[in-house]
Length: 498
Image (cartoon, rainbow, N blue to C red; front, side, top):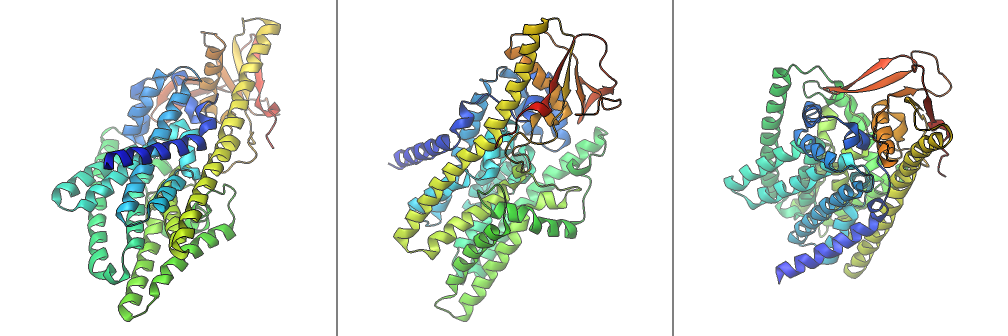
């Protein structure tokens, strides 16, 4: 019976996520670095693995190595389908965890679905290169579930799972802390100090052990291989944590607290925080010294854990705001918000409100995936194809090189971090993108691809991109196009969406 119920819940979750991300599942597009790590990039698997191991994500590098098996734009929808399956697995794990925390079935289901419709998880579907990063989140959830069982055996299993999660994507592994924050929110204030603190100490020890093993091995590998220093991605360099914390409050925290709103406003963030705070303050009733101390302890613990969900970015040399880094932070805020909403409202109204929020989340994800991924990216790729095809029809097939005038502004209605980012802006992605267009047109040969800036054809703005990858650096050379028949693809001529 339990297996039947789980299967039904999974079917509901999967259907909801498919509806949310349906535009991406039958799209004709790739997004920025998706081209770089595709078969059209042409980089050997060892080079990709070395690239990703350099930034501490070797398991993601192994996954990228399999992307070369898909060599058609339509086939990329299969990879996006796998991303949807990953989100469905995460959603099911969250649902089961919340049900174990005595959360009502409808609220738990709504919260689990709403979680994976937020922008950080939408990025995992619209941006194929980040699907491996999102995979780190359910692995971290499994680690938390194992640790919650208690005992040495499960603690060791949790440590191993966390190491796997870190090796996929370090920020995603901190979803472990997000679930610890949820557990703290759900615990009885009267048992916070005698019980929950002890549990949190155990979780802290497990996470610390996993990070110690992972970072020690990574840093030793970097030293042995003689890897050059790599600024923000390098595990051997750290930044000013105090300054980073101030930046965290101004940017990542506000953006994540905006939930589904891609254009963040401080008012939305304050509203989200107020709902969570109000729900925790309700626990002050019926009063009593022990209850007050317990509630204050819970508030302090949650306040500390929120920046900890973004901790790996905060200690890095050059932290930057990208939605793909928000999975743990967004997970904590969204789940706390949904649970707080259900606690503030009467039981029946809470279930109705939670389901309404989940439905709105599904609609928001559908809009987000279209406005910032499928529509602008497909327009860019079709423009590249059309320019090549137009040249073939008017000048013939004997062109010798392709010049791409890069695009400075987004094709999407707006750009927020990697959302709406134009693929034709980044030089290393140009050759793979052009190669993909050539293959889609049935042209099997390769030609040099040269990048230049709009309105400034003078050297040294001419860059020819090569095919050799050294650590994180792609070979290139400066110089104008050589004499020959040139196709010019001026990305500045692509009309922007409104």
